Length: 511
Ligand code: B12
Ligand code: SF4
Image (cartoon, rainbow, N blue to C red; front, side, top):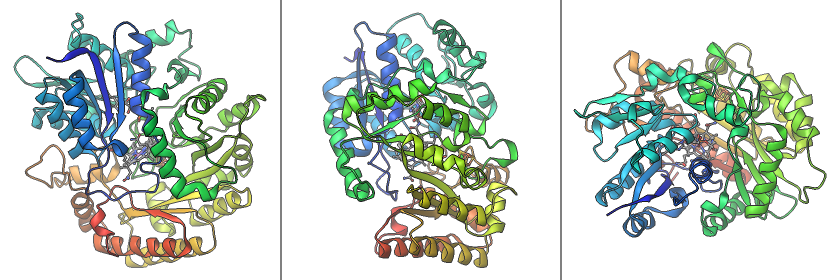
């Protein structure tokens, strides 16, 4: 017997074979918290919500939870590097009779093949904003008369077993929070939010971080402190993630070619009010003593109006000194140096900057003609002068990559590290994904399915990356791994953090 009044929401942590980035396990997965908080607000009567982050909790404990809680519905947050774990959790959940729903970018973009190939997955919710569709699905599972075909962005099997409903490739344009298809217009209206003005994200309540056990927060803090405490002048008392802005100023051809963020690919911009921004920060401190807080908007520097508003709305009675970590684009900062000061004013102490390449021809191929290495360097100097640390990431092996450009990037990144312009360096071969340019190129050339036994997803991200680089780049995947290892060695020597995301661990072990 399952408990239909209990929903278990879990972020599937990275599969064991994956290499880590230095942020992994240091920052909470807020997607499941956002979903759980929404459900508690909307279905307050008799619903129990349990949230866990598999990245720090471990599969054994998730297995024990399934056996003891017997949830009626299990929601699994699934990214490209956590698909195997997500499937294992689905299998465990199913063995006790739960219904299983996958969500987040990876599941969303691949919902059709996931359901065609995985009997342990009942549903996929393909949404930027999973809250409302999950609420409707939960109500359906609990016995309310809500037909599956009335749930926005749901992929499911019909009575004959055919996979029907949301198809990301076909329907992604309908996911906007202000689209009639998304189902949010009525909720916005009820909340008194004008969908034509910015502020739609105010619809989502302040995260209830207590949905994660205290132990999760202690683990994030311990992991974070081990890697980042040395960057702080004041003791770090807690770490939190928040998200009060979504979207990017890049549109159309200027979207970075490797970008796979669903909302950015569809041109979605949604913001909260500056007041809500500070409420979230205050709550993060009250709930888990967080003073190091990651605003996960990619890319935050795209919104100078919002940042200015946030600076103006900063409460005088906050009672602590928030240290913010945000995404910023080099181009935004180099062309608008005043934005660096604005970031400083609101408490930004570390910026995550996708520098991608330090060779103009590859950089421009990846990000368009308006970006340059000179801008990358200028932004790094501005940040350093303002006392803001930079987490710089680099993507190797694009179509314009040649041995010369790869050498140029590697040497320049090493010199950035040596000159103290980076406090973290992340470098890895480019990864084609269902939503990004590289993925589309593989699909167009019939090269997408690289694993015949797992046609829904080639679980080995390196194979996919290798296939792409081998066929379309002027270097090999091995060349990129060698370059990444050279960058990692320089970072290690300098004593700064380093990592290689979305790439397999074996590339970097014993090197
Ligand atoms: C913050 C962040 C992190 C944090 C926290 C990780 C986490 N799991 O949340 C850190 C730094 C630790 C991290 C790590 C990684 N990340 Co990350 N990360 C982000 C970022 C910038 C924001 C995510 C976020 O917090 N948004 C705010 C919350 C509220 O929204 P959300 O998580 O998207 O969840 C909403 C919906 O997606 C949906 N939803 C989510 N889960 C579920 C589950 C169910 C059942 C349902 C119904 C709906 C649903 O509803 C939620 C509420 O609206 C995104 C890019 C972006 N801007 O979206 C990349 C992103 C998600 N990360 C990505 C990647 C690749 C990684 C890493 C693999 C990097 C690496 N190590 O190689 C790891 C994976 C770690 C893991 N398995 O958890 C990719 C995923 C690509 C893909 N197709 O899978 C993204 C899209 C960036 C990119 N490259 O384009 N990341
Ligand atoms: S700056 Fe970030 S969010 Fe914007 S397109 Fe590039 S990778 Fe995507």
